[in-house]
Image (cartoon, rainbow, N blue to C red):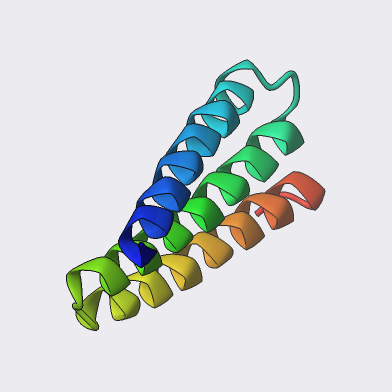
Length: 86
């Protein structure tokens, strides 16, 4: 029962990644693309966490944490560049 719920959550998350990917591609401004990238990263982290639980692999949680930190730093760099330049 719980595996079906987690599988459904993973499928819905993957569908939402594709919707955010459309915004990333189509986005009229740079800020739209940055927000879409951040949304994709957050959803990917949740998918990694779901997979870590389903496969009973704790190492995937570490991967999700590192991915989250790198994603956050990437968004900060783009925001700083957009605001002031490097």
